[in-house]
Length: 500
Image (cartoon, rainbow, N blue to C red):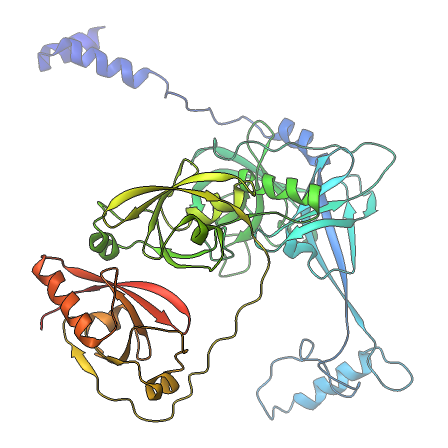
C-alpha cells in the first residue's frame, strides 16, 4: 500500500494507479497455463498412433534391357564424365537379372504415419502415404503388424481411410473441433519421422487458413511442432487429447523441420472420412461455376464497398448455378447462410453442403444484392478439356487502338479466328495487340483474348468498347471491368483507365 500511496501522490490519480497495479497483477483472461509435462497425455495417445509402411513394385521400363541402368538409379554426372562407364558397370553387376539379362522388378518402400479412429480398426492417413502401394503394413506401438486394406481415398484433400482387423479392439482417438483452437494454443504431434518409430513433438498453433497450393480445398493449420518426413498422416492433438489436425506437409529448404508444418483441420477431414467410410469415396456438393478473386479494382468496378466474395467467371451449362439463375459477373457473398469472405472459402462451403439440398445464395449483381435458391448437385470427377490449337497463319491487322486500356481490338473475322484459335461460338471483339506498358499487359491480357463484355454489357464491335470506356470515364470510374474469353476459359479483368 505504501507503493501505491507514493505513486498516487506523485500522479494525483490514486484510483487510476491502484487499478493499473491490480490489472497488472491479475492473471490473463482465458489463457491456459503452459503444461509442466506432456508425458501423461502422450502415454494415453501413443497406442492409437501407428506407423505405416508401403511396398510398391516398380518395373524397369526406363532402362529397357539390363544393360542400361534406370534413370532413378544412375547418378547425375556431366555428359562424357570418366565415371559414367564405371557407374554403369557397377549398377549392372549389382542389379538382379533373370537368365535373359532382363532387369527384374524392384520393390520400393515408403514410411508414414496414421492413427486409429475406431476400435474396430479404422486408420486415417494421408493419401500420398499409400498412393500406388501394392501392400500396406500398419505397425502399432507394441510392434504388432497388420496388413491393411484401403477403404477409400481422396486425392483432393489428400486423405485415406484404411482398415486393419484383429480379434481384440484397438485403442482409438477422437476428433476435436479444429475451429475452437486458437493461434498460440499448445499442440502435440505424434508420428514416425524418418522411420524411427513413434515420436512425440510439441509446439503451438502458429497460424490458420494457410494456402500452400496443394489442392482446391487448401485450409491448413500451421504449427511449429517439429514435423519431418514420415510424420505425414499422423495426428495433431489439442491438450484434451483430441485430433484437431492431420499432419500433411512441411516447408523446408533443407528437407528437415524448420518449424513450419501444416495439418489438415479436423473439421475439414471428418466429413470427407465419414463419406469414405459410408460410400467408399467422398461425395461433394457441386455448383457448376468457375470463380476468381475480387480485387480492389474489380470491387470498385462492381460498386462493392470492399473486396469480398467470389466472382463468377463462367457458369457450366446445365449445372445447378445456371438452373438457379446465377450469371457470369455475379459475386457470391454468402452460401447457405455462410459468409463468403474470399474466393477460397466458396469451394469448401459448397463441397461440404449435402447433395440435393436447396440453399439460399446471396449474390451481388448490377450494384445490388439478390437472393437465389440453388439446389446443390454432386461433384463428378472429370478430365480436362483439350485446349484449342493456336496455330498462326498470317499477321494480324493492327486493329482499333484503345489507349486507355493499352490494347487494340478488331472484329472477329474468319482469318482472326483461325490465327488465334478462336472457336466459332465465341462472340465479342478480339485483342490484336497489347501495349507492353499499359493496364492490359499489367493484368496479363494478351493478343488473341476475346472481349465479351465491358462494364457487364456485351460488346460486338470496337466502337462498343470505345463507348463503354468513354461512359466509364464520364462516370468518374478509375477502372473498367472486362469479361474475357481465352480459348473457352472465361475470366474477368479490371483494368485501370489510363490516359488517352
